[in-house]
Length: 385
Image 1 (cartoon, helix red, strand yellow):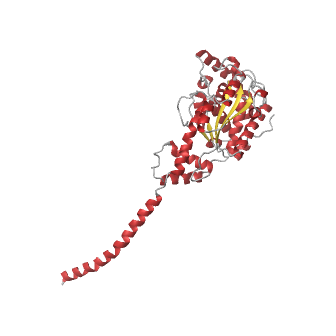
Image 2 (cartoon, helix red, strand yellow):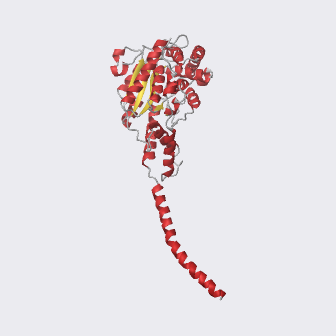
Image 3 (cartoon, rainbow, N blue to C red):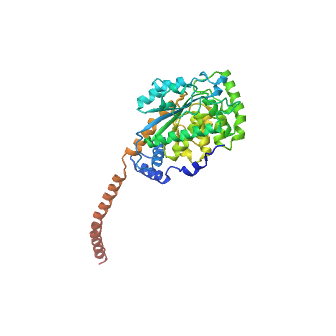
């Protein structure tokens, strides 16, 4: 039985400052470009201002990519195009700079942090900075057994909380959140189906590296069987993560909630981060106000989760590679929104000057009218005589 009380997050998490957002909207109306002409950039700038409690909005200068890594036992059923237990290879590609997210991050000047929660490898094979929060080696096969014990789920959740605190304390002002996993989309789809009350076929997608039809059918069957195990524990989010989640998913859920507590905005990547966000929303209903959906990954479970949280993806470029790459592509859009909101000049000063000139002209014209009025009266008197 866990001693962790998730209900505390409901009291700790506040919404972004509504008064500041209204001030940001008023400032936007005074800028030289008409309101609405920048599309979603207007909304993003105002959202950032509220999240930062700052008008004008501050630039996003210290973003970071945070990736939680883990292997899932369910991958042994052939539900992924990648071999079971091979997430370590993907982690090494991120660390040596050869993966898509590493290339993009290098180009954008954004540091990448990988957190090993349950990779199926010797922890000594990875740097301490990566493996320091590991909970266990791999997660259980969720169609027939729990992914974690409740104690492991609590430890993983608290590790995610600790990582969020570390990032906030170091000055990170926005996080791009993703995962590096094999079998993670299957576990995520189970969580989404359970929380949204849908069938397995509705949420079963092709994964980051697309699978064929036979693998899709195996994946759908695995989600169906895991879903039967998930439904009895829907009322306890930590137990749900222990039953059909995994150490990486539990850590991401804790990270999302603590990021909202610390008022640190997060861009969600694909279906795994979306599923964890959906669990976190169940814990604290105000938490999604601190998150953006970076892109549409094409996974039906992601679309279901984002719709439930009323989050609209910023981009739709068909990126399915995962590992935070799609969400990282949305970062320049957010930074552009901040720059426009802060740097576009206002027209209020010019309007006040025009009004002052008009008032001065009116004052100058008034004596002329007064001088003309007596003459007009005299002319009227002459006519009467």
